[in-house]
Length: 312
Image (cartoon, rainbow, N blue to C red; front, top):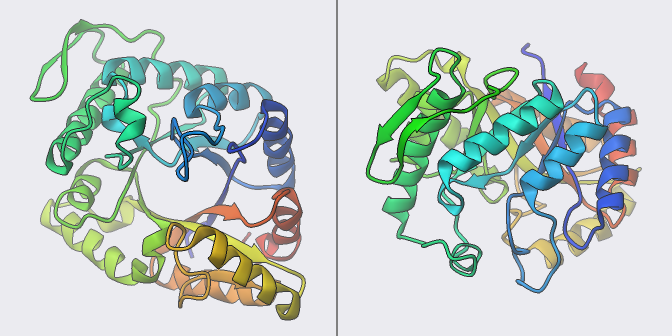
C-alpha cells in the first residue's frame, strides 16, 4: 500500500499569530506530515471576520516549523499578479528549505477580488487564469529558465527573472471538482489533485474521472496523488461524538460536506480508522484535515495517538 499522508489545517480565522504558531508547532510535534492554510482575504462567512493572509502566514510557519510540508487550500490564481505570486512562493520555499506545496484553484468569492481592486471575471476566464498561471509558475521555477517571457490571454510577462529559485520545484496541487476543465488540467499538470470537502461523498466518481483524464493525455494515473480535504470530528467514543457531529453540521452546513455522509470522517477512533480505509480503497492517499473544536490541538492529539499509528 502506498504511504498515506496526513496534513492538518492551521487555525487562522479569529486567531492571532501566536495562536496559529502554537497550533502549528504542536501539530508538527504530533507527527503530522503537512500544515495547510486557506487562502482567503476575507473569512468565508463575512468580510468582518478577522483572518490572517495565507502566504504571509505560511512564511512565518516556514520559519518556526522544521519538518512538515506547507501549503494552501487553495490560492485563487487570479487574485494576485501571477508573476509576483510565483516570486512569493519561491521565497517561502527558501525560508522553508524546500517544503512548500503550491495549492492552486480558480477562486469563488467575488469580494475578496473586487474589494482589493482585482477583477472577478466569469468562471471560464478564471479557469483560463488558472491554466496560464500554472504554466508560468513551472517556467519561473525551472532552473533552465533564467528569463521568462509569456504572452497569454491572461498572463503577460517579459524577461521575467525569479531568483533565487525554489529549493525544490514546489509540487503543484490543483483543487476543484470541475470535470471538464479543472480536473483535466490537474491530469495534465498537477502533482496532487484535491477533492473539496463538500464533494467528499463523490470521491469515488471523481477519482474515476481523474483516471480517465490521465489516460486521455497519456499519463500514468499512479503519478498523481489524490487528496481529500475533510472535516474530522473525533471523540473517545461514539456516544460523545454524536453531539459533536450535530454541532458541526449546524456550524459548517454544506461548506464542509455532510459529517454523516458515506465517506465522512467522524466518530470514535475505530470508526475514523474505518472511514479512512474506505477512502484509501478509492485511491486517496492524502488527507488534508480540519479538526472540529475550538482548540483543534485536542482532537488532533487524539487522532495522532489512536489513528496515525495504524497507517504508518
